[in-house]
Image (cartoon, rainbow, N blue to C red; front, side, top):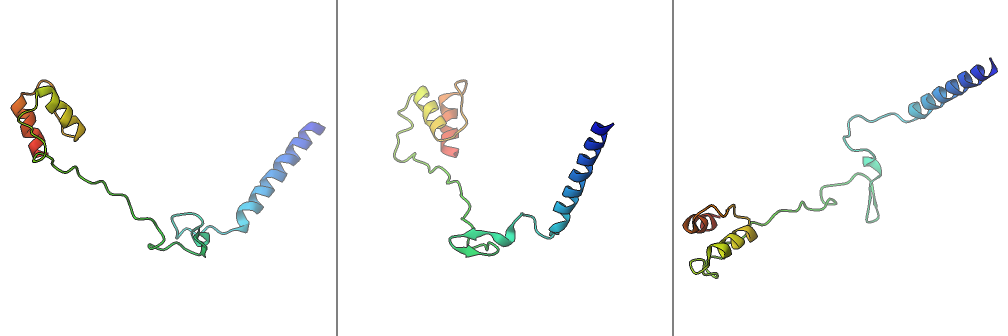
Length: 106
């Protein structure tokens, strides 16, 4: 019987500790991110502003290099490699003219 009392007392202590822990700090449901009031960036304390956040990275589109590269003089395998390098969808079952059209259309 003493083991059951000890286990029961331990459960009660854990429940009380959890209640105390989570009732000390009210939860601010208006903010979506935790700790928005204590953000520290380069010596600043306080909410992060849009100027403090890094700019989002943008992907640059591949520029067409058809003027610099002689696509008409390339073999079909060279065209397939060039298309793959530049992110153009092409496969070996396509004709050379179709691969050239796909590369030129980007």
